[in-house]
Length: 128
Image (cartoon, rainbow, N blue to C red; front, side, top):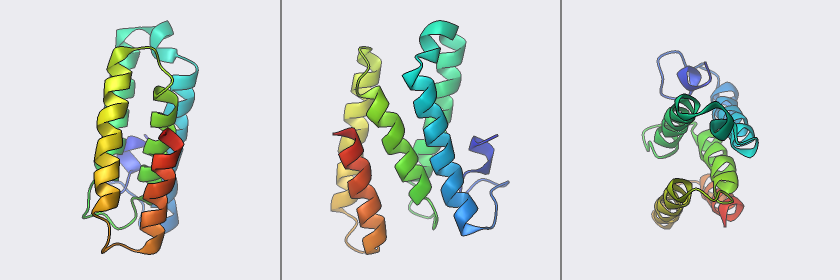
């Protein structure tokens, strides 16, 4: 349900606040599931569902056509923060790749608002 209401999705709310909070809520939910190591307990099917949800959040995060995706950016930061403590090689590789992508996104954000740049910087600091 949370992925279906992310900014840019057909069922996304028209409200700026709701769009921002949907991305943040999904990130908080996924980070909590990562913290509980739910994919280890529930197996491959749960891991696939978590990765699909994270992929939707990441797509929202890096979609430059979206106006209210700062919640998605912050949500990605929360998930990556917990994934960075994982002992699974796949998680470490994913975190490293996204750190590079977020860093490049921040480097290229000169034309964006100061708030947007601060959100990106905060997200990077959560992961590092």
